[in-house]
Length: 288
Image (cartoon, rainbow, N blue to C red; front, top):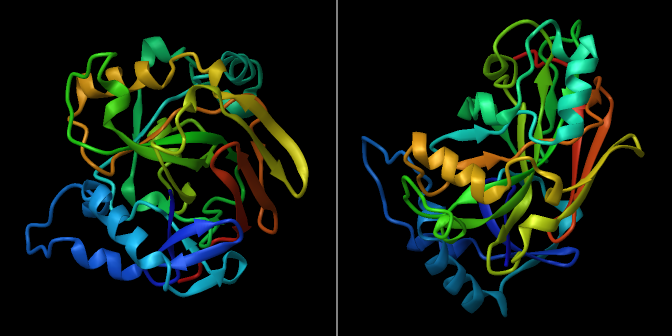
């Protein structure tokens, strides 16, 4: 099933070029009071919501997908985890080009591990990216994103895939500079997730996904997830050895070679086999 969050926190099932509005399925979610949970309730109760959504689909309103604004499919991740330089050719280009490494030492992922991005950087495709430091280079990075479906720690390789709720396309934006990676990648709107969540029962082989990224129609990145240095299983085992994984946590798995700058007015399009196409507009700095 492909599930999207659209307009003002409505829930939709994506079928072809249409969105089926199944928002009443969210009534199954428990009401919460302070202190709020540190995980995403929609992902925690995903199976119940899916079952109710199926019941609603026959008579639910249908909208053209081009007529809605897509939000992040996961509204409240407890944490955003990310894998740096997880494709060999991207490691090579990052080390070679000063505009990328900016005199930072670029180490391979097996040495440096994962990093975290601020939850406040998360948006959906409909909001777009707002460039915060236009005088510096701001780069696009297309990545497959894994959404955690249940609580887990110290996962074995055999159990790792069973904790996945689904997958999304991810756009990990970064401002180049000398600061720590997590600071430069945690700017508001610099974590784009979408266009929707494809549940793990529909996308059964995430280990061999062709994907690409284009800017203004020009292909800049093209790769397959089979080329990950640390694959999805290895990443989950690593992450769970440091963090307790919670429903709704998201994991950006890494970007291939071809990262490059964008400026206000550009349009970024990612295309992931089995997931779909995500269109993201690049805007100037916010004024409010």
